[in-house]
Amino acid sequence: MAVIERPREKLSTLDGVNLMFDIAASCLGLKESMRQLLRVPYRQIQVEVPIVNDAGELEVYTGYRVQHDGARGPYKGGIRYHPTANMDEVRALAAIMTWKTAVIDVPFGGAKGGVMVDPRRLSARELEALTRKFTQRLGDFIGPYRDIPAPDMNTNAQTMAWMMDEYGRRHGFTPGVVTGKPVELWGIRGREEATGRGVWLALDEAARQWDFELQDARVVIQGFGNVGSHTARFLHEAGCRIVAVSDVDGGIYNPDGLDIPDLIRAKNKGIPVPAYRDPDARRVSNEELLELDCDVLIPAAIAHVIDLHNAERIRARIIVEAANAPVSPAVDGILEGRGIRIIPDVLANAGGVTVSYFEWIQNIQMQAWDEDHVERELERKMRQAVRHLMEVAEKENVDMRTAAYMIGIDAVARARQLRGF
Ligand code: NAD
Image 1: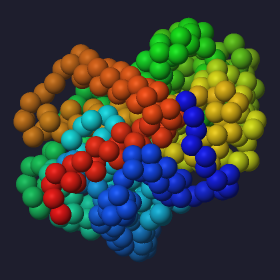
Image 2: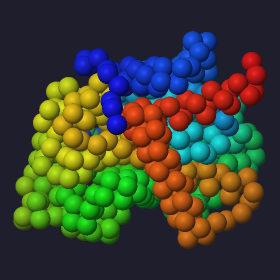
Image 3: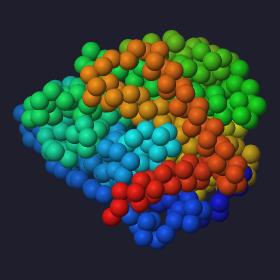
């Protein structure tokens, strides 16, 4: 497998996604006109989101939704609440969703949304008001056959319940407008942990193909939210040794392995990772954590945490991109040159959108799937996608990230062509 040459310079998340698009489009020999069509998003929405805070004052936030491409089905993608959310980042993440839904082969396009807000500063009532107002502002641009949001950073099943309820005020009962809802409110069993389960399955299938022993493998995970904590649990159950985890406040490291079930219990009680008591663990910063000696490194928090400043110091043998865009494509060559394999985001974290697809089917058919069915179908789709991607990478002699983009772009370009212009 060869990494196609990339400029070694600091890239924004959007630059990184566009660079990968150009590389894969060149490998596919895609026409310039089609490149233009697929590079630029279909629609970008920016809205003001005013709320009255608990002190009775007006606060105004900015919300974004980018619908990147809908050739293969309704737009689909998460909504994040983050102080640095901005249009360029949302654009990049929307494009990633377009390629992801094609790679995992679910009939959706790609979208993403965000509100620039630090949700830790907001009370539950303020968060509800923000979510309802944002949903109102998105108006008819979302809908079960148009654009279907889901949870992402700092949003969860409760956020989706509010969105569904607010949308329903104008449109009537429409559970399929969002996925990742609470199970009691037409959500699907297994969605909460789906992304983490998918990360484990992607790693497990790739490890089989590479003859890499996962039993007792030393794993480091950055981010202990939905994706990070569930990934930790599945890998712990699979016999891996989770030696370090972190959240936004910092991390802890114990070379003998951390007690993951207990850490998750602590997290659910609201205890930050660095405050967790393990007499054999030492505290590490998020920067240090990424550079720890380990077999598998799983960044599950934010974008471009592995970049030119630290790529030479990463000591893992495999990186699994559980977050979106945690590794800048500018350093793929440096990592690959040092023998580090990368399982790219568009594949590694596709378990979430896959189970979202099952939830959506369940909602539009008014049926309920049992959990075994969800797990079996997710496993089948994840393993199939990993094998297919590895075959393409080998056949085309490209790295896994380029192969993933090639699969995604090819599928979307074909759909566009068939629809006509
Ligand atoms: P989350 O809000 O549940 O958890 C995020 C975690 O990252 C928290 O532990 C937080 O403390 C930590 N974090 C935040 N900023 C950090 C920083 N600067 N340094 C280190 N840690 C930091 O979010 P999530 O849903 O787990 O999403 C995590 C990543 O996975 C995001 O990139 C998201 O886009 C991606 N993703 C999520 C899903 C999903 O189903 N939730 C699906 C696909 C991809």
